[in-house]
Image (tube, rainbow, N blue to C red; front, side, top):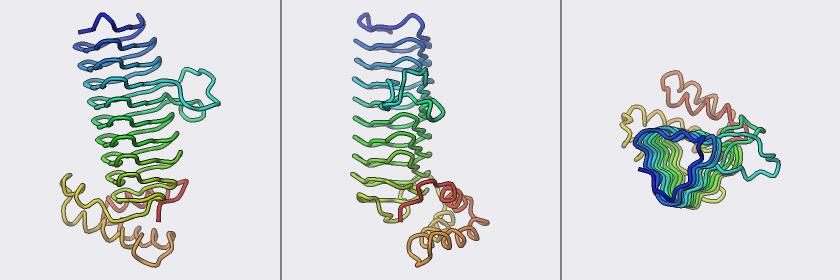
Length: 256
């Protein structure tokens, strides 16, 4: 299942039923799990580890050096989970010693063409990153978040679970869970109604999230007072509690 033009370092660990297409390069100290497919011209750089069932399209660069001037060739890592789709010309860089030394991509993510995931980013599960989305260093994107095409995330920002960004949205602050944003700089527009319905959220759950959103964005309350009011709702809603915890842990504050 390995094309004769592929170049594979002898230290690389290749799982069962792996397909490696023409002109792929697999560098030293790498692991590729069972049932992965690398189409052609894919580079998997050293110290990259990926799980099972990943499909990587032509000209993707997986695990190359971080774009960080302080990087001094330390043995940092890229760790990718299972069943991810990584399309053409995607670039995912390894971590740096200024953070935990690892860039992480979870499971079942859909990463479209020309997406860039910089050093020390953490991508959760079931996310969608549309064409040309760019994550700067140390960005965290939580489960089921969707980034529209050409979305741009400033370093150290976080995108909450089930959040949604419209095309060409730019973030300099955090995007809370369940919130839809648009513009540059990003502004809140609504909660992600359609996405929540598709994922089986009940009317009651969506109603509680909607109340929290109104406190956060439709009232005249300061952020501190809005969070106090949301905390009361959180006693009856785990989803609102997720929003409150996210805001309280935010180091860059949230979009408003």
